[in-house]
Length: 362
Image 1 (tube, rainbow, N blue to C red):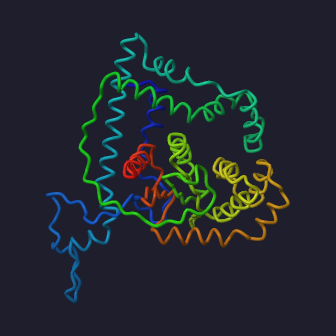
Image 2: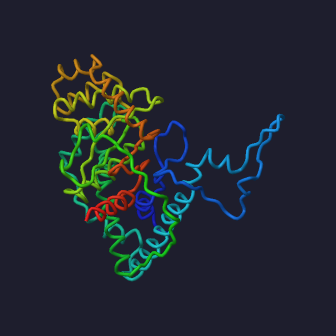
Image 3: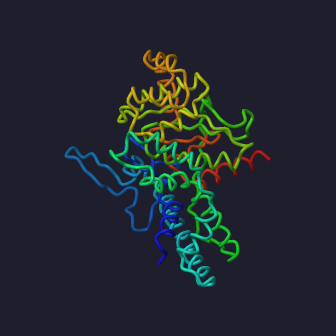
């Protein structure tokens, strides 16, 4: 059994977030719509009647499958991803156990030496700045020293995950681990025409364009930020990211937050404001949106005028309309050169699509 620190890292790296997203239909997110649905030998035949009406009308098993084909089609991929996740965890556990035994360490000591101790600590000034920014939302009397460890853990979170992944991959390479888990048949790639208009980062002429539809109040969108940054870091010259607004109707603060981000974009600070909103998802009322603007150094008068006037509302509506046209019904939704990747997906899912696109362009 792995010690607590190891388990924490494994949970962060291998969590089942592959089909996680803010979705008004509460159905599994899908990466594509296959032309056929999965079946097993234990299922009824397509012409099996599953419901009848007094007037003789019937509903068959095949008709039912057609009606719910997207979530059904997603099950095979979901099962594969769960098995792959479980296998990855199983492999890493065995490798960590063997390496710890070889070095006469506990598993916790090994992870501390190879992961925790190899991450530079954030500067004291950065820790203090975060404390000062959050102080008003902390329980009265909470001191800097009391919350310092949690702030350090937060600041080091993505670095720890990255280092853990590197170390686990080193162990796999040394042990010559070969993964032979059979993959389910891949459905035909469906490519949508999505306008890449909006705030962006990355080279304008990049061969890969990722259009992200997102909601500032969606927790899964916040979760995806680290993965997107990892993608941009891994493909600095090959990927351009474009952000488009898709505030869901059950997130009451999201529409105004979307407008606010575009007001910040007018002043050249969209991404700074974007990061601030996602770091403060429980503070998205209009007065708080204005406070966030001050903290990122925006011209308050110009920002407030833009936000209060609703000048960006039509742009938000246009983004949403474009998203709906290409099948977006939840967030985050990413279109990689038009190929939909839906939900808070892990880095490997992005990598698979990007590498295939880059290979096809050679």
